[in-house]
Length: 129
Image 1 (spheres, rainbow, N blue to C red):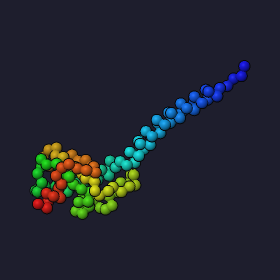
Image 2: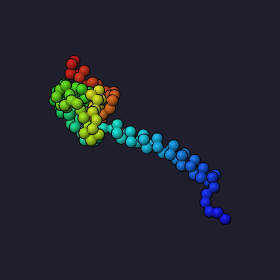
Image 3: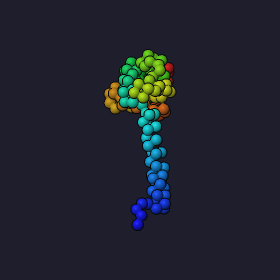
Image 4: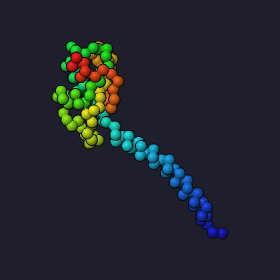
């Protein structure tokens, strides 16, 4: 009696391996792309600190109970950040059309987040009025 695998058994293993790869590879690629597109915590900390200085500079004009949106371009134009805003960990440039959302969490204290869109009061609109 010969020992080995039949053609059907080999084809079944190849088909099962292909199905597993079809499921696993896109999920892995999405995870890698998502990580590559994300901004590092160090870069966010620098941006949030700049936004905090910006808000503190205009504390006499702003209301402490209002959620503000500060565009990175405004932080660059005001001298709080230098252009290009770069994430050195990922070696990529952060677009200046991103917003820092400042949500009040106490007296003159804010929680910050960074996003492409912001649903709060634009701080530059408050300053020009």
